[in-house]
Image (tube, rainbow, N blue to C red):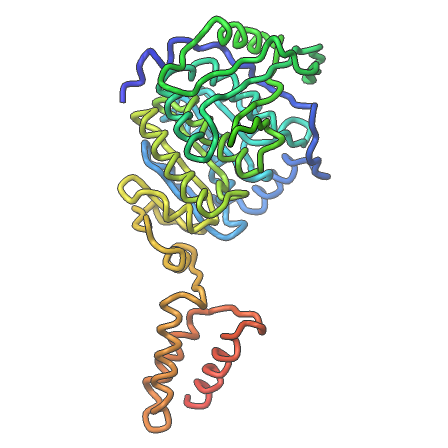
Length: 404
């Protein structure tokens, strides 16, 4: 798709730092950068294969195998600069390792961090939306982005109307910005549709935001006739809206999208849907966009299309391989990609039945039972003692020992 002048006809400089002090949700006891440096010192080995330009990547692995470190390395060590004009970082976790907005100024491309972390080891639900507001009424204020964003909102139960409420900046002292209460005369309501375009109001607010005179105070949506602001939304709704709106209004040709643990706070249905929406939005917004997602969710893995997706399970030194897991059931993905076998999966049920069938003749010919039992027990299925299958597997193990 041609990027076109419609998406890029008005671009204003975005402030390099946004420091949010109006809500403090969490303050860790240790400095995050110290923790990061310690982790990198203890485990310097990192997945060495860069993502393929223009492809969709899924990276899995147990905790501590380097998924988040790999995402950060694409920024920190500059490999992304070789093939991208913009980096967009999305996060479903408060413990992502992405640089904060303003901490990646050495990059040759623009850097947009849409996580909830801010300076001073605090979390803010409004910080990423304040950054997003620059693009909603800035370079992304066009019919292509508006139509895509409106479609996403409607599909998850919201109307196409999006309200932006602003406050005036009282003062800025060093890195700290003090915000006044809402200034109703600055509010804007936009219709997310193919007719979205710049107006005098949006241009005026954009200039004022870029100059530090005003800031986004809140985002307002409508659902089932009810007006909802950010604090009224569930954590899953906020993450879904932030992710899809950021892609609708910020993706352009040559973008690298990094997403750490998108499954957090999302219902299983939305875990599958968010990947489908990402693929659709990115495909319509850019001819070439590289995406890398780190996840623990089999639903995320099975929602990535085979024709454009590559996958890797850490730890590994092997190159990216083509994904063949689209549309596969959870048990299959858990087994083939995560190395986990559910005791309730069809394959395990078949193995248990095979053990029971061959057990009938084990006194005469124990070899078939021993083979079936070994195959089942080698699955390393972990069960609590309260699980009804625990006694069955225990008995099969005992009989296997008896007939050996």
